[in-house]
Length: 448
Image (cartoon, rainbow, N blue to C red; front, side, top):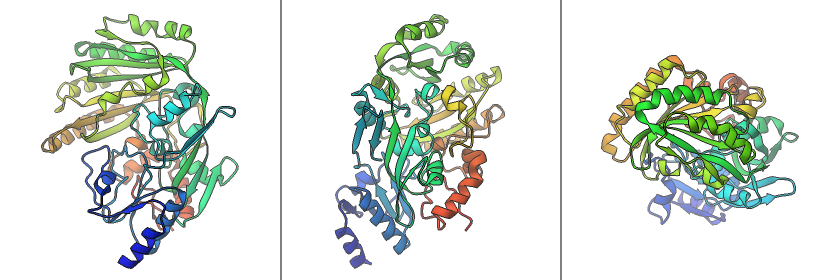
């Protein structure tokens, strides 16, 4: 096979890395330090042509394929053992069209890079909440972010995309071209092909009212009761997040973070009840750039840590569910761990469940238990605690789960992520990837 590999490597615009090559170790490392997989080859793609050649080579040689975008992978699905990893992280081209209010972006971009470029034109679109997250995986899984109340999810703002399918074809998808595949990639993850270009709708967003108020952890129950009442009545322009987390100095606190994307004057009035509630130990809500809001939580996601996450959607924040949250967070094994409730509402919740592959369209919270720790010796204790916490929350949550927060949790949880759209997604998997070449993901198994 060595001659075939050398011929393949010589045809590429990018690099083909094998164990021992410079850059191999860097390319196989992702955000979650628990992931330690060893691909047989890593193709650092220079463009769409490399992706097409890589897919053809993997299919012809019977190799497992994984796809890395920005690299912020909790489940570790960006990396495979013994197969071909398509590394798109160097594909960072981007062009903003301020007249049409659109942006064309390659899949290696991270949120921070994308936001800095669009903000140069006073524009933005919904993306996630940590600047180190890749735009590709986030968008393909739905994309809940600070602008979801006003402008919907990231996948709702996808205008078109260029996709390389399992048979090596290059397809442009949109509402008028290859419509079924366009539907599938807006929430169906990486099951149907490799997206090599995303076109997004942008919106006028410049200075926003953002920040957070932090309260003593001893007042967490009262804070969360107030938070649920406050969030339930907020306008589309305001998106919120409640969290039990460590303050910058490590002190456990109960926090409520916000982003208001309307006029600052109106925003001040809307958030006033939040700022006047209780006796916050810190209040840093104020006018700020959208880029600063997007990076608000970056310090809580430093590179190099071990991560284990569990998640569900939750509609009602009851006294009993609040008590469970507070009780478990009081005995977390790692001080770096936090839990959050990210609000999804407004425009994002008014899209019919079957209009995109992302089905979870009611007003609710994305509940995340984000365990993170430094030493591999602490892995067992942290995973055990996270699972126990998640099990204790099950009487209070919905069946559905946000696919971008899902780890290796079995077929039942995969189906819960795709909800009522799962059977249609299976049909499209049969059409576009009948041999399941793209299986290293939250997999939709073909039946053909």
